[in-house]
Image 1: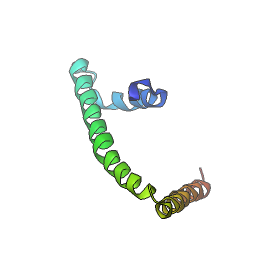
Image 2: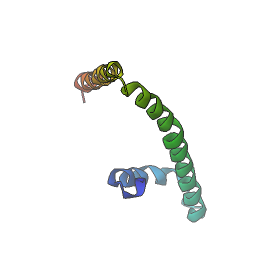
Image 3: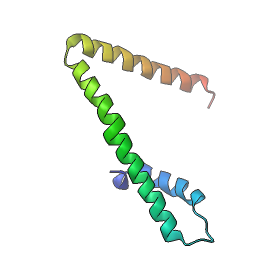
Image 4: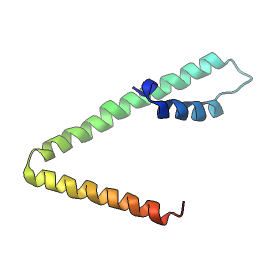
Length: 89
């Protein structure tokens, strides 16, 4: 999925080279880094996100659950906006 995402490509191009030693063979290093990224992506996407999505899906089937989710995520968006305003950047 990330291979078609321009932001992911820029991130990988900026992030990966700092972990590659130029004096050692580069292909094995890039293969290890790529394999590690794929493994972590699979664990996070299939493990973490799937578990959270399943519980949120069960919660969102009721009207009360939908209101709760709307309030929680709305509050999170307001919190992030406040952090951005007051961070000084």
